[in-house]
Image 1 (cartoon, rainbow, N blue to C red):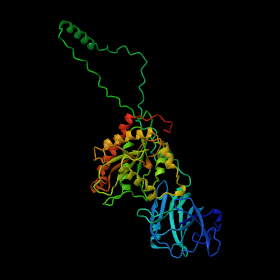
Image 2: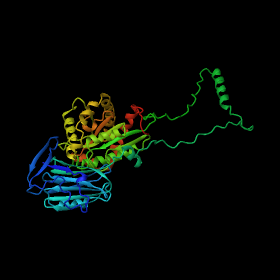
Image 3: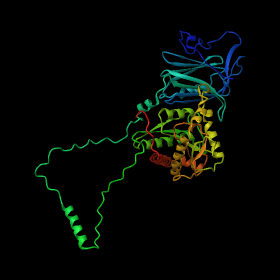
Image 4: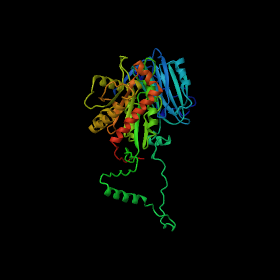
Length: 487
């Protein structure tokens, strides 16, 4: 089993001159031939104390991956067996030091150095070295103080064992302030107000021309003519051609829409025969949709991810609630074992079971994203899913169905529908108790013809436009209630 031990700062020597020395290799070393280890059972809470002999065969690193993002940076080491890991942070300058036992330095691990990008928000560079036999040390030089999460993942899907380093900022940014700094949180999208005309209270000058009375005379003549000729039919007076007032869908306040591009980072989602990945396609569609929505008056958008990184399902929901979203739309590209499956679909949450076997199968696959993308079990709120489901009200589901129906109707104009009605299933990402939420399967990426559509700029733009039309129709029929929010 794997073991990950954070070393306390007080156990690190004050004379920390070189990160590749042996002063802090093992905070609790006893010097005996056998060392007592603490193991954490993956997926559980049982703690075991056992005696482990020295590792006889070095593990092998199979791949290294880095996923930089503003939210956090993830570093993943994929290996052929479980690893024993110790780590600690060092100040002035900020560093994260990781010792991996049972490992010999190989060319694949050395590739990690070149994978750190200059624009990474948190990692300046990484150094890799053989600290001592069977122990490799990684030193991450950081751009700011971080709160590291280090954990392992069991084999799943196409992945073997994974050792994951998630580097979060020490002070988590407020989501609304982050959008304000990016210029994405607009308080008012109304056009500039024209200065009102000040009425002239002074009396008019004496030479003002007299009003034209021709209209009055003409009307009097018409009445006279009607008396002389009983068959006379006066022409109807022309009505002023005023454009009808557009019904406001926002009740005078900003509407906030959360768009969730599915998958990302370690979780590619479905992959088409042409090698196109769901996570890339849906991010492109989501960005197009965001740009279109933000062109509308009184609407703003929050993306749960704006780059290629993984966001746990519960965090996607939390992000939407943090900005008090009025709508939540998760964008996906469907896949099935049979490549002939085709069409677009819209799903909402169900509290009574799936509406079909296919809906249940899809929900199970989408809910497995946390296993593939990689969630730190120790920091994951295991009760969140059940709590959110319990809080989901009939009203929320009914509103989601209304939204889903109009969006599905608009999508039917650009693509075939896999099913002509909105389906329901227990999607974890739709479990915000107070936000109408839908999941849109834009097309089947497993179908070669629809895979070509999904990668076509014109189709992506049409899909975004159709979703926008559905959103506008929903709000025109269901104006949002006034909320106490920062606008």
